[in-house]
Structure formats: C-alpha cells, structure tokens
Length: 83
Length: 524
Image (cartoon, rainbow over all chains, first blue to last red; front, top):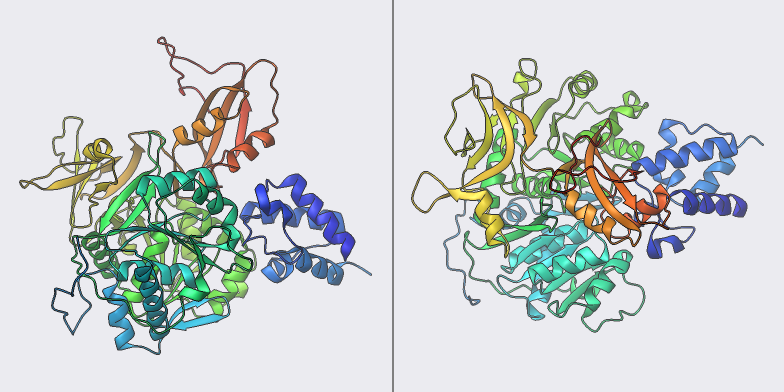
C-alpha cells in the first residue's frame, strides 16, 4: 500500500502541474477539492495506473472512492491487482 | 445610502422584486422541501433560510452595509449558496470569484471592487492569505473549515458566525440596487466587473425560467461553478421554482455524477460542450437509468452538430436547448427544441421580454438575412462595468428612448429570414475555453512576467473537448531555455486553470506588421 502511494504521488508531482501548497497534499486529501486533478488529469492518471499495475479501470469504477485520493487509489489497486 | 425599514409592500401571492425574495417566498411555501443536495447532505428550504439569516446577521454585526461588495471565493457547496443569499439579504453586493483564481488576480479583484468582506475556504488559503496581506479594504474574512488558528486578525471561522438564531435587520433596498458584480475577461487584459442590479437579475431569471418552464417538481444538477453566472442561475432558478438543486463540485469523474443523477432522479441538466463531451465519452452511461431527465441546456459555446445528435439519441425524452448569452445581460437567446431539426446550428431567437437586432458598422439596424453585431435591449442589461466608464461606453450605447442604454455585445451574428441567429465571430480576439472567456492579453501579460520571455502571442485553437484551447507562441531572450511544462506551470501559478495554455510553441521570432506590432495572422 505505502509503495503504491509513493509511486502515485511521484507520478502526480512529476506529471501534473501542482502549484504551491497543493504539492504537500496528504494521502487522504481529495484531488478534486485540492485542485490537483481536473478531467484531463484523471484520464492521464487512469492511463498511468493501468500501465503501471497491469489493471483495467472499468468506466463504472471511475468514482471518487477509487481515484480521488492516494488512500483510495492504493486500496483500489490492491483489490484489482492479480494476486 | 443608509439602512432603514423596508419601504415596500410585499405581495403575498408571489415573491417580491428583489433577487433573494424568492428564497424567502419559497421557504414560506415549502419549508420542509429539499432545496439543495451536496454530497451526503440534504438541506431543506427552511434550514437554508435560517443559515442565510444567521450569516447575514453576522455580516451586519461586523459592519457590512448596503452597497458594500462581498467576495465569495469558494468551490461549489452549501456555504457558497448561503453566502450568496446572506449578502443579498443585507443589501450588499455579491462578488462570486472562481475558486481557481490565484493570489495576484484575487488581490486585483478585491482591490478593484473595493470589497469589504471575503467568504472563503481553508483549502484556498494559498490564494487568499497572500491577497489579504496586501489589502486594507477587506475588514472581515470568513473562513470555512479552518482547523488551525487564523493568522490575520480580520479572519473569523465560518462555523462560529453562521450558527445562532439571530435575524438580520431589514435594509431599505429597491430593485435598482446592485445585487452582484461578476468579473469577466475583456480584450484589454484587465478583468471587468459586470454590475447587475436586482432588477437585471430578476428579469433574466424570470425570462429564463419562463421559456424553460422550470417547475417545483424539478431536480436540477449543477456541476458548473457558481462563480460562473450559468451555474449561479441554476440555484436562483431552482429556489425560485421551489425545485431541488443537486450541487456537485466538479464533473471530472462523470461516473459519480451520473450515479447521483440516477439516484436523485435529476430532471434538468445544464452543461457546456466540454461537460457533454465528458458525459458522452463515459461508456457505462447506458447502464444508468436517466429516464427522468426532461431538459438539457447548453450555452457558453456552440454544441457541435454531432454532439447534438448523440445527446438526442442518448436522451430521446429530454428537450435540448441551445442557448447564447453573455455575463453583461446573462442570457440572450434560446432555440426552441422543436427547431433543432430545422436549424441545428442556430442559437435561436430572443427570450421573453427582450428585443434584439443586428447593426452594421455605422450602427444602422439590419433586416433579417444580414450579418452584423448583435444589440440587446431589456431590463436584464447590466448597469455597466464597475469603475470603468470607457469600457462601459463601448458596450452600453443610447437606445431608442431618451436616457435608455442598450447592450452592444461585440458578437457578430447572421440572421436567417425568420430572424433566427447564427454565431459568426467575436469582434475582439477573446478565446472561449471550456465555455469561459479567456483574454489573450491577460495570458500574454503573465507570460511576459517570465524573465526569459521576449515576445508572446496567445491564440485559441479548435479543441474537441474544450471548444477552443489556449495556445501560446513565445520567443525567448538569448541564454534562456524553458520546457513547455515550465511555461505552463508558470502560467498556472497566476491564472485560473482554464486560462493557462494547453500548448506552448517556441519560435525564433513572432510575425510583425509593417509598423512593428506583433501580429497573430498566420499563427495556428
């Protein structure tokens, strides 16, 4: 879990243009509320998750619980990833 | 101006002449009805009225008076709604500000408007704390969800001031008083504050509510920012009709919004082409029951014909309205849905209680079947731009009757023989991205703040998702080197996200006219 969070955080900081204090976001912070991701951002993030973790994010799974924070993403990846 | 008793007779059978009267009227008619749904929380009309009164009384106690400007710098949520009505209730002027606004621009907006108070959120601190530090006019800053101590002595916790059963004092107010100042991008680069009276906004609200026929049983989905008048009017319209509004923070994850739409049986979906493109790209859409949807509205940018077709196939039971408007008068036209098959590219004709015509360069009225600048006459037309007499004189010019002023929109339209309007172009070079106006000058000014930028030119280019995307051409001073991302990052640190360039092209030099001015002809 921690490793996933670190990898996704690094991806966001490298690839998204997160300015100012938003770059210190917490694991539980909502990307939408913190203005980290807009709609294009989420599409890019999903592309990254699919490639990096070998999963397929279904349309119905594109909900805040799965994608809107590092905690949400880590929990979601763990349930999706082939064991 | 002074505070005093209410100097008007309330009409018991309908709401009064002020913009907030409809909330009070609706709350007396249907106190227990759900007015607003924000995430897991549902708010009834009576509850909203109580919160509005408490916040209004606090603002009054802190010295906010009739005519004072109060900035609402918040993402969509209950507090923004309560704030808007509380400001109106005490006769002050609402100034909604896009929550993506950065420090320097926020400082400009507070300064330009001479705002007395600011309502904002702890998450937006980076922008407001800096803006507040260099502002002396704002005497009260109310902060939502602040967990730590508030550094500035002018700051108070929203949760402290918005509770309690105090009622505000009644304020003498008539429909000629200002209700709102909404800032809009202009070709000069400095945002202009569009001044709207209660009469302006109530008139627009009546006309729009009438042609859409919004009713008490409606459930409106609002994922548009309330700082954008199109979003703000969803609340105004819902509260006027006694309908419910589902207020969403964003449409960035359509799956969640669509789920909410199905669950709440949403009947009205207002959007812009970008939002509809996201909705139609959501492949699981057919799995959700959205059969309750009866009205879809589009404005801010033209809906491509292919999207019109896709929306109608997806929601055959819904009436789809193509509309056109500008902040200076809110709305101008709508196309009756039954006309979509006849003239899919038209934005329609005038709405109730307004008159429209086209003029040539000399200001002569043109007959149907012409091309010219659109002129709007009606009680919804703004009072002018705050503190900008010259810019006001360009847009507001003498009308048919002595003393009357009509709005020259700066938009060129074509009419067909029945007077239906087709958008042709803007007279200036303002870009429309995600349905919001972007001034190329404003973006260029930010680019020039980057030390190594020698020349900059910004244009709009067609984009399937955004309508137009912002594209920048820059040439650099010798010895400087930037990546595209560095330039975009710099822009995002000063500009709202929809204003920052999506693409940056580095060139050796920008094209110039014979007189040496940078020309954008040929850039694409």
